[in-house]
Length: 332
Image 1 (cartoon, rainbow, N blue to C red):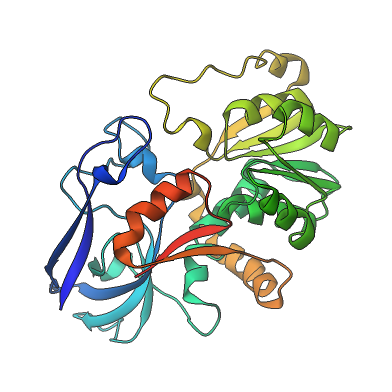
Image 2 (image 1 turned 180 degrees about the horizontal axis):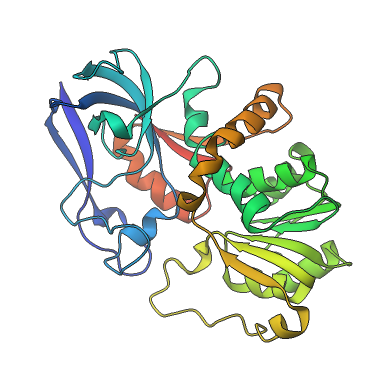
């Protein structure tokens, strides 16, 4: 039996294509001292990975051409050289994009497959859930009674942001998404007060209609025209958490800045960029608070699962194209 790896074959210019990836079959690796061998079961594909495919300096190390890519994964320990991990343990780690990973034991975290489906530890109870929790509560300083607008609201992060805001007493939660099915999911299933398809009409007009009294918090996953619309609708002393800007990730030229940014002076709103890595101290509090909400069904989540590690590149391209509802995962 061989192991399979997905490598970066070349750096994309603009929108990535399958030619930018290489699939390689290799021998199953052997763990050394202080390491474990994990057979990956579920891999995460995330929008931030697009930035790592470029050589530009960013907050995360670029992937190396010719080398295996990496990202979140959950799998089963099959071989261990340390006492803390035994074969059969289920662990979360950062060496996805391969079927088998040799992981330093100090970089693996045991998860309980009985407490939640293992895929949840990559999404709603993992990095994306923590991003939503920290971004809304710590970065955007959400307060009960706020009106909240979430862009990319049907994605893994946005869908949790909107629900958390509702559970914590938001006056009104509004989401944008790219299909009518996603819009319906947000309002009918997740309890958003309003949602709209950003392809139907200018975002600025749709947001004004959905939030006639303006918004107090904007959680940004999209950038571009959504950010401009949020600036238009934000109230005095509003707060924005800038988590992602998927609308500009494939641009080959810099996007024009929001054309109405000057209104930050009159409205005195706050914009803060966020990276989840700054907020890992919140992880225990987050899991303690959110895991019961997930278990009880009060906080719903959706996953789009693609089968087969060889389909991981296509799953990633589909993610960038908005084909997912909730968290995009690959089942190895």
